[in-house]
Image (cartoon, rainbow, N blue to C red; front, side, top):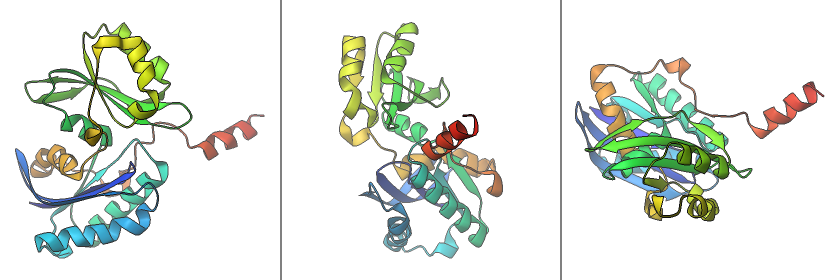
Length: 239
């Protein structure tokens, strides 16, 4: 099954084309570009370039996979809108995958607890905790925004002997994690901090083959919290 996969939840715009089967997603081409702003201008040309590298026309695609976040509100809206538009125009199935799940998959060889931490601005991170064992990964928590201090308190409460931290939340808050978790914290290299389209597709592959796809018009991003504009509006309404 020829699948187009992409994610715009982070500063890294990632696009891949894979051949998906029930137990694998063989990578045909992938392009990753640093795009802190301008996903709208970058994504469609990046899709076209990736397809050209494979020799596959848009009309030959059989499914679309998109990263749902949490992450950049603007990036997520752009990615999900374009994914839904392509799926509708090409009349092919669509699957949404949490972007943090894709990040956790990249470090799945780690045995033990994995905590994805994405910078959510406002001195917070988006986080989720996973259990990794024997190459299998299971998410244990919902996605939520919280302060780094609250996150380390929750990790300490779980009495986890060792946890791999992965994501760009490390950059701004590493001292907090080191100070509270000490030697229990293992930090992933920077290359693993952002989702990759190939990992999204690998997670989605079994669902695509089984036909367990998403309903086109019900698929929405995982925002995890209100936008700043929405929060300000609510404050004014209740003032």
